[in-house]
Figure 1 (cartoon, helix red, strand yellow):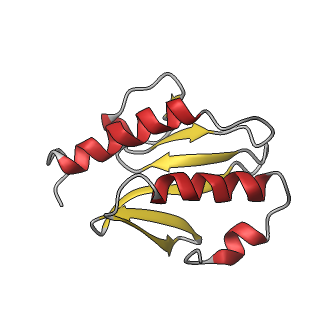
Figure 2 (tube, one colour):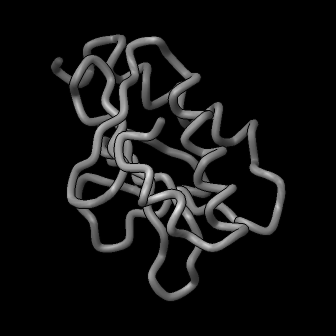
Length: 120
């Protein structure tokens, strides 16, 4: 059961299903990833270090991954906006999840933690 299931289950479809699938992907990436809630949103930690969040754009209602150490990541679909540290990866809730892009992005981010680039 999600750390704060109301975040997921209060959303309309197709956002709810998309967010739940995104959650499953993150949790399945590594046994050291755990879920909690920070700032009212699902937060995923790698060995208790914040790794990524799930959130939705308030205007478009597009779900996205908020990568905590996004400044260290390069991917054509990552957006920094006005953030100095974090970047987002938007997901279209009406389309199939871009599994290959998500897998690539998550593994690049996890490598930062696994290889010691990010101090644990």
